[in-house]
Length: 203
Image (cartoon, rainbow, N blue to C red):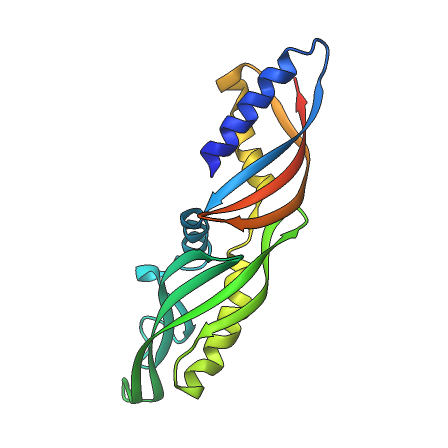
């Protein structure tokens, strides 16, 4: 995703340089984001604990716990689908042992991509698969429908600013992103296609 943004900015820069005296330029761009890029974002922002786990209850040292791991992102029709694996020990902790049941199951949730200001966000959470345990689902539903889409959000403006931070060294021109507006997002095949308008300051 970042490499594609960098190529788009480089092509736009050459066009700006050809226009003598112009120090500000606005242009439209189409960003194609892969499912793997969204998956990396989710792993970095949420599944960043020990062994890539996110604990909904307890932690790595408690006898009873519930955690999700192994997130996988895919595109199905017009939706972004997130699959996670869960493990849990549900019950009461007694002398360092969880007295209850152990479960290992999978869960799926899907979203519609949605622009949230400068960010690529997600709405319309739809639970596609849950466990057969009501106690476990009590924790899974808010995690899947609220926590996941929040942590998968990508700020497109921040990504571009990071790319532009080294522009003077790499291109000889200092580029500053002055504005970014996301017009639309749609799933097309293996990509999330994002249409944006940006304005750059060139020094």
